[in-house]
Image 1 (spheres, one colour):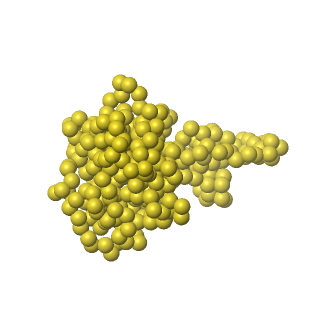
Image 2: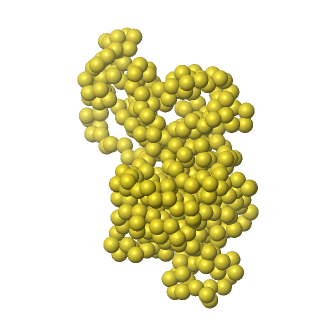
Length: 372
């Protein structure tokens, strides 16, 4: 199907699905961080600590300061052989991705981009490949084998931040089945979940405030510091003002065309429950069309969206995160494509005033409606 027909399909799918097909935003949030809870939902343990906490009754959050202190001091004499190898691997990565003049945010972003693009997510929340089982929860295993459980990703990210003199903590949820990070930039804390974004990217779990993270996890808010800023959230930095709810579709398309995997709609107009429902219907409709079609330079799905309360004078803020997959268009026999195109043109010439050919494609299988 030509790009023109596919774009028409996206628009028509929006109109069609607004009539009733509404999808939950959280349905599309990656289950990598959340999926562990399905197996371990009975856990009721609680721990007010950072290091020494056991996750999923198997993986212990261990300190990483010995390695980071050695890096900053330029002296690894006090490290054991495994720690020295970890330091060597981590130092080499920082030398590759960090340049002079970078801000703390730019350094953090560089580490996030490297980890989410170069590391491998483990299928099954508590299973690792046999040869790395003993080190799946620490930086040595993550950097050497590029495969780990959540504790390994969280402690590795913290190690990088400590080496860069950026305050960072490992956080765990109340049920003790998942861990992630809190990182401090310019005096404000942000949630970062590398495990959730490994292989995905898109910044859906990067520099989140409590208001968004609490929609996904719960933790000891009396022990861990509050994350109350949006300054270094990528979606917020790509925000677009919305003065009229009916400009939302244009804003969604502009973000896609600009290649923004994360952006925010910042509403300057009043936003009530009805407005939120309408906006979510629009997003769900576009999302359904994206998942049905593969269009060049467009994401293959909207991964997640989250409402935020009033921020910096805006009535409401909606953060949106796209997922861009591999662009692997199907190969088509040129003779078959020519026959198909000629048939489409004949149908369009005869019935173009009755229905769109986009509704006569593989999205519906058979003709199921009309557009006048």
